Structures are given as structure tokens and as C-alpha cells.
Image 1 (cartoon, helix red, strand yellow):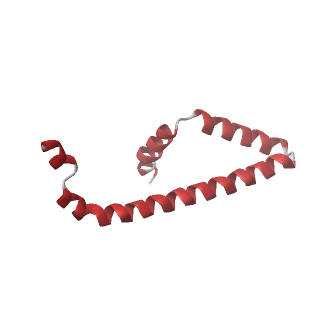
Image 2: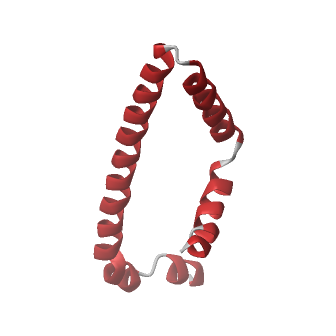
Image 3: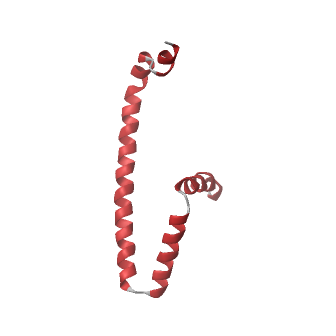
Length: 87
């Protein structure tokens, strides 16, 4: 019974449900924005790559390899802790 009171407390759920629903909307909005941005940036980089400009091709390949090699959590931590030090 204590487990149910701790994790499935109806009063706590009722208090925070509007906030959780609002947060879910923000999360879905960010997910859609991320997907659209990724598709557009990927398409732009692919078009630049097809253009055949050697220095640009090299930079795109380096960028893609670095982004593929770094785990997303590392990038998040670098941004979270690194951006405040940059102002």
C-alpha cells in the first residue's frame, strides 16, 4: 500500500497533471523542430556536397564524422557547462 501511496498518489497526480500536459506539448514541439531542422540542414549539406567543391566537401565530411563519433550526452554536457563560460 505504501508503494501505491508513494508513486501513484491521486492528489499529487491531480496537482501536477496540467503542468505535465503542458510540458508534453513543449517536448513534442521541440521534437518536431529538431526533426525539421535536421532534415533541412542534412538536405543543405547534401546539396553542397553534390556541388563538388573540395574544401567544402572536406569540411562536411569532418563535421559528419565528428558528430557521429560523439555521443549526444557528451554534446549536451559540453553545451550545458561550456556555454555559460563563453558568456
